[in-house]
Each structure stands twice: as structure tokens, then as C-alpha cells.
Image (cartoon, rainbow, N blue to C red):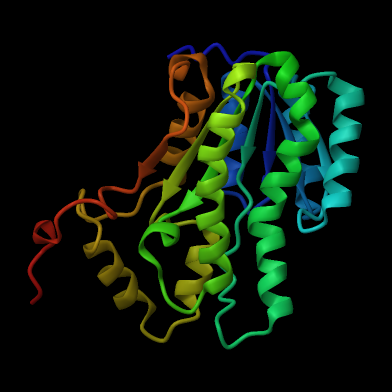
Length: 265
């Protein structure tokens, strides 16, 4: 499907993850549609991705940015504004389930909020003049943890709950500018970081098998490509009357009846 994203300037935060990560899949899916991904991330891996995108003939740029630092976000937005002069969409993708619990320090909790929530606010705040000019749109990548809880991750849960609140608030606040705001909610996706976590467990293979059984549709994890495909559709004009929505790409994990799950042996 032609999503009419060619030459659109799409800012993607958290876009320099390992190959196969959600951010990595998003930027190269955008490139396949002829869009111009602009990468914001602290990992220097982004320079490699910038080179790969430019080899495809795209005027993509990577702005190395510590997304927990609002001043760095402001500087990066100023640089990309000077270079491109517009932003057609923002995909707030950064997210680290850092395990900051009630047992951790207030400082750790605040850092988790800065990275996983305040970065979303700062990115949109500083990019808003350009979004207004383009009547662009915002897509926030969220997590089922905001809906279901998880245990042992107060910082991430609070941040992702806040992301959903901001999504609806912005949808209301920005209607007058023709700017849409939506959130994508993910449950279990087998990213490289997820794989690394599984490999730290003594019973990793059994744990992974058990997790897959909790996902009603096909008892498998959502692929990062499926997430990227939904992201692209949602920011495109094919979703031009969709705003204020929480779009679940989770194989039915959050909402479907537990009776659908396979019986325990």
C-alpha cells in the first residue's frame, strides 16, 4: 500500500536501538516508503543508521541526544528545524523498562520519568511550531504496563501511564491545529533487548515458552515488523480521522478472555 509518506520528515526518538529493535524497524520501514527518518537517540549506533539511510538516497540525519535531558532535546530540534524547516510527524518511541521499584530511590524514579515520559513532552513541545505549520501528527509508543501493571517497575509504569494521559490531552489540545495524537500499545514483542533478558535467566527457554502461551492470538509474540507496519499506517493519511486513540498491537494480550489460553499441562 502506498501510504503517501514519500519525502515526509518523520522524527523518531529511541531510534538507534540494536538491529531488529522496534526503533530500528520503524526507521527502515519509513525509508521503504520513501519517508525521511530523523533519528534522536543517545547511542552512537545512530551514525551507522544515518549512513545506511543516506546510501538509500534519503536526506536522513542522526542527532545524538540524551533523551533524559530536555536541553539536549531542545538543541536537537533546533538543529533539525534549521536543516529541514518542517516536521510531518513525531514518533515518540524511546522506552526502557528499567525496573525502578518502590525499593529504589526517588532519584532513580525521577530519572525513569525523565527518560520515559518527560522526553515525550519535551520533544513535542519544542517541535510544536513545525507541527503546526505542517498539520503533522504525533504517535506515542506505549506499553501494556500502563494498563495492566507488572510489578517491580513503578517508574516505567508511571511514565507509560503518563504517556497515555498526554496522548489524550494533546488530541484535545491540538485539534484546533489539525494535529492528530495517538498511542500504540505493545505487550510482548521479541526485541533484541528482550532476548538478552531471556538469556540471563536460568530457565529462559521455559520462561519464553510460558510467556508465549499467555498471548491469545497464535500464542506468539508481536513482531517488531508488525509494530512498525502499524506505526506507519497510523501516522499516514490513511488514518486521517483517527486521533486520541490507544491502538493495541498485542495479539489480544490485554483485552481478550483468558479462557482462550491453552490449558496447563
